[in-house]
Every structure is written in C-alpha cells, then in structure tokens.
Image 1: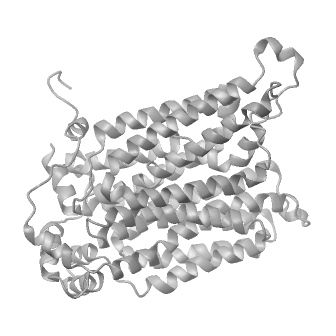
Image 2 (image 1 turned 30 degrees about the vertical axis):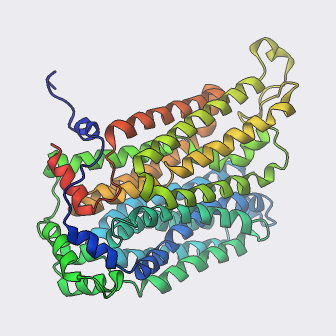
Image 3 (image 1 turned 180 degrees about the vertical axis):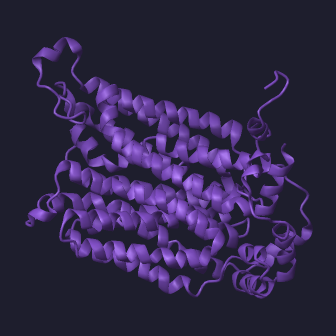
Length: 498
C-alpha cells in the first residue's frame, strides 16, 4: 500500500459514526404511529431459541458432577471425558453456524428457526435415553448444532422485523436470554439430576416451535424473493393498522430489489468486506476476552481463590450477567453501541488485570518454591499465609469482569452482526461470524488449562486484560455507530465509505 493511501477498513473507522442523513419527516410520522405489541410478541417467540441455547451451555455445569458419580459405569465420566462433554457443544455450534448461514438465505429466517428446534429436542432425548458415553456426546453435539443455527438466525430475524427505535433493545435480548438460560440451568441443577434436567431442556424448544409457527417471515426476506403481498401482510402484523405499510415496503424494496446472488469476487467490494471484517473481528475479540474460560471454570477459579461456598459461584456470576445484560438492553438505544463497547472493554481489562495481580500475590515466590508442594493444577495454587484477607479481591474482580462483559461485549457483537451485513451477504457473512465465535470459544475453553500452565495463572489473566485493551482500540477506530439508523442506511453507508 502506498504511503499516501489509507486502509479502507480504517477509513470506515476514522469517520467514527454513521453520518446522520437527512431523513424525510414521513419516517418520524410513520414511527410515531407504529404499534410495537406484535413486534415484541414475535421477538419473544424467537428468543426462546437463545434461551434454549443458554440452557444447553449451562447444562454441563450441574450435569458433570452428577455423571462423574453415576451408578452406571457406562455413563460415569472421567475428567477428560467431562471436558469433552462440556466443550463438544461448541464444535456442534460451529457446524451450526455454517448450516445456518446456508439455511437462512435458502429457506428463510422463519423456517430455519422452526427446523432448528428438531436437533434441540432430539439432542436432549438422546441424552435422556443415553446408555453409554458416546450417546451423551451425540446428544450434546446435536444440541450444539441447534445452538449454532439459533445464534445466527435469531439476531438476523429480529434485526429485520424491528424498526430503528427498538432494534437495539430487542437485539440485545438475544444475549439476555442466553445468560438467562445459563442461569436457569445452574439453578435447576441444584434440585434436578442430569436426566430430569435434560427433560426440562427439551421443553423450551417445543415452546419456541409452538409460537414461531404463528409468526411472519421477515418483510426483507419476502421482498428479496419478490413475494410482495406476503411482505405487506407481515408489515401489517408487525407495525399495526395505523401506518402506511406501502411506504415502508417501498423503502425496503428500493434496496432489496437490487439484490443479486452473492459471488466470491464481490468480497473485493468494500461494501462487502468492510462489514465482514468488522463482524468476524468482533466475534474474535468477544472470545479472546476470556469470558468462556472464566464462566466454564468459575467454580474452580473461586475455589482456587479460596472463596468459601464456591459451589454457589456459578449462580452468583450467572445472576450478575443476567442483571447487567438486561441493563444494557434497556439503555443501548440511548447510549449507542460504541460507548457501551468502550466502557465494557475498560471494565474487563481492569478487572482481569486485578485478578491476575491476585494470583501473582497468592502464588509462592520462586525463592520459596522448594518449601511448598507441587501444583496439582494451575487452578490449585499453594497460597501464602494472608490468603483469606485477599479472597475478596478475587470475588470483586470476577464480578466486575462479568458485569463489564454483560454491558457491552456480550450482547453487542451479536446485535452489530445482524445490522451491518448487506442483505445479499447476510447469510454467508453471519455464518462466518458465528463459525468464528464458536471455534474461538472451543479453542479458548480447551486451551485454558494449557495457558494456565504455560503462562501461569496471573500471566493468563494479564493476557486477557491485554486483549480487552485491544478491543477498545478496535472499537474506537473500526466500528461505526448504528444507533437509530435503518438497515438500508447502514448498508448505504458502507457503499459510500470507499
């Protein structure tokens, strides 16, 4: 690249925010007459999918201790098997991202959601009827496949049915329902065995199936397939009877009517590759913050920090995540996406650094190494005498990290992914983003133990802190603000920015 040229991606970032185009007063009049009841109903129906996804992710935490003590030797999990039982879901979800990217464009958003309920139910039924460990793995893999499809299709569906004033709040509800499902699995697991917990998990996708069947396909997908009467009917359902549905249909149609099949050569077009790079990079930053490692190993981390009642740690961090994700959903359409991402990054960077400092203070110094027992695990440090006086530091930093993640880097990457991709590239680009997210989740989760050995516990958390600081820089320079903009305006912005 010549010295006088600049990166096209950074050109997008340097402009900072999407320019506020002159909006026709008709839009404000239109939105003032919109009735949101049915769009809320449709969003509630589809977010039962992320609720099921969260339950799948949280299921392993209470199920693994029960399976390790199983009276049936064929189902008793060893440590390595338990690790795969917990993490194989992410591999299934990565495959689901690829499958969902194909389905969402070929058969539509609604039918994709209806079909993804099938592997959820069959996955839990396989676990319920498991006679050996292979069946347990197969059930988890099927549930992961459904989770991958869900995590792609639901954000796309919500972004395409919601108008600009409520899109941020409804889009953030995707992550809110995921963390609610995780917490629900933790709480239910305190009173249910692994089989009955799986029975409960199979009920949620059935409820989603029963509601989504009555919801409309998205108007944008219908118009891209030249099914205009159905698109008008969908808008009538979603916006209420008081607005000019033809006007919104024409606004969408002006963009959707030009759509053609996406070709590989088009990825040289900045209007395609800029949002693609941003979407994929946000998923990488979400995972390299260390959130999945921290959540999956929360109880072990608290035990290593000598925090009493460590069995309650999962419920504590799950409750924190639910509360602050709900808070983010309420304020995101006022504050904007970038502000929350920057605040979130700073909180996570600071808290991960402090947690690393805690482990640095707790681990024995090299000079005293000959007088202490060898570490049985990187999360089993031999403490120094003032261990109890510092336990609060680990608890505080862990709580702040979860809070920071829930405010920004938890919900917002999924929301922005559903907003910035052009309509004709939405399936392919969303599939690549979801695949990236789940593969990174698998690598971080499986590699966390090795990182703790290689870099020591404090070095690992300082590494997470550094990646959180990088995410702040990326947010400031590369992510455009999408608050209050229609999907058509966002797409037009990327077309103009090169």
